[in-house]
Image 1 (cartoon, protein in one colour):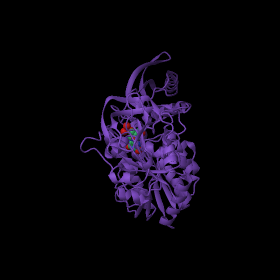
Image 2 (cartoon, rainbow, N blue to C red; image 1 turned 90 degrees about the horizontal axis):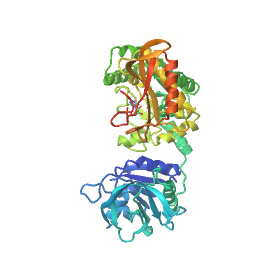
Image 3 (cartoon, rainbow, N blue to C red; image 1 turned 45 degrees about the horizontal axis):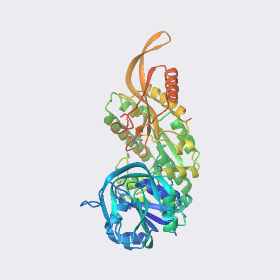
Image 4 (tube, protein in one colour; image 1 turned 90 degrees about the vertical axis):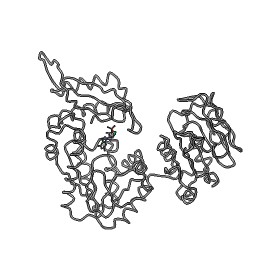
Length: 507
Ligand code: XMP
């Protein structure tokens, strides 16, 4: 039987990280709203519950609370940060503002005779980030950890299998955090750890076959990780019944379009590449406003897709590479492989598909990459960094022309090639055609040529980011290659802005 651990969301920024850590420990997990009722939880029959952190103070009116009944279900619970404070508050403890808030890595002294900390050292560095603390524990609870400023940094009521930690075991900054979560799963919840991605593949293949039968499926393939893995899974489940339309708008990175064609033409699916570069370029003539560019590209994409789909006749199913975080964010129903078709991002609203198939809707991004590798996709696709739908067009300031595209594509290629040699790469990196010109000197001649900006960011969710502290050596290497290999570029600059106030992309 499948073991499930529920992660109840109280607004903490690490909810996905918690759920992913649990899955990495081979226990299936799902995120649900913190307000879920105890009866619904009973129906789901989880082996354990984790309450996430959150930005609120539990003693203030209106702060989120779980259904109090969940503490009576006999299901093991681990409260993290706000989750611990809420559990203590609701069970009769006392939570108050800290005299001294703790932020960052601090030393904690843990009682290693508690099952939660079994196998750890007594002093352990943990990540703290709190302005409230548990002043008094509820009856039946004992403290199992403390820091210099927080005497109840962890607590337990072993008879009821209730545990709490004020710190964040899910983040890398807490030493042995994964081991602590593992202790909760295996020592407290009694998990067997039977969640395997291979099972996910088999279940999806069976479900897709049941749903689709002998009918046909259409997929808009962008070449990004999600749609590529979706295409591979479907080609395995229903060989010969899937048609992929790859609209090449001409704004892809160097060799990308050909690589996508090479990989997917070799699979058991009908691959259609539409070379629509000229159509897109002519619609973007004289357009300089970023939003207008995006709208035109989206609109043209929809038109091309619709025209091509129209040529194929009636195809009842549309497949999409929606992944689990998209489902959580949109507040949609979880776990459903199929839902009725509303508006598919970027696709025409009036496309008459009976049903939409989303076979990756239960997976996190890193799991999608692993799945892709299991399905035989090359690392050049499964390891791909995020790339915006409008592609290089929004990395060219001002009007998009063939000439500028060639310049930014070449600069991007050089940057990717050099950064590709690094062991630890930033999460996203690319070149931007700034539209600025500057005076330079090549040989004995004065030049007045283009300026390329380099952007590289570190981030966990792309909602915020820091610029990556690339070494001067690598920046110099990229800069000298770009100015040497691209004659019309005379200057290279490095973008050192975080998000906010900037965004990752320039447009
Ligand atoms: P921003 O620029 O909003 O980007 O900070 C955050 C992340 O989203 C990517 N991005 C897009 N992805 N279609 C996409 O599929 C788009 O139109 C788009 N615009 C930005 C961006 O590359 C970064 O990873």
